[in-house]
Image 1 (cartoon, rainbow, N blue to C red):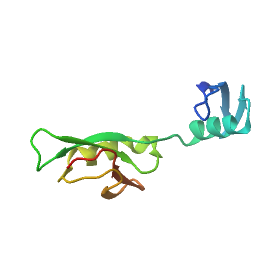
Image 2: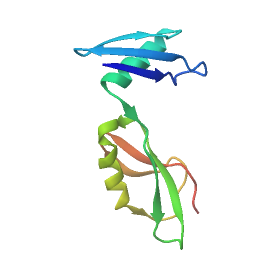
Image 3: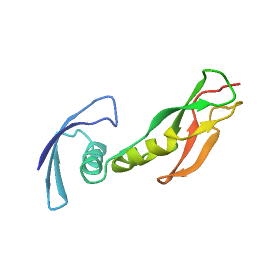
Image 4: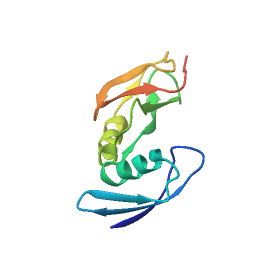
Amino acid sequence: MKRELTCIICPRGCALTAEVEDKQVRVSGNACPRGEEYAVSECLHPVRTVTATLRVANRCDTMVSVKTERPVSKDKMPEVMQQLRNTQVNAPLFVGDVVLQEICGSRIIVTKTVL
């Protein structure tokens, strides 16, 4: 299988071509080793940082932005979002506060202060 990717590791944005065969990845187009690492990771085990908003239960019409503390496996994103859909928090909240201890291997942290 052949994939065309744009490297997101540095501002250069190299156009990468990754050819995957039997879990072996051949990468071309990268200007540095980090581009190759990115392409291999994206082809074999893609991860994403999940961002969302949660309802602040003790504030009228207020939401707070949150994110996973570390990237989670791309195939786990629906599971993360399902758990977040059912979550409400109470103010005050500060940037960096942990609102959920563990979802798919990551904590959920607040990215906006709500007093």
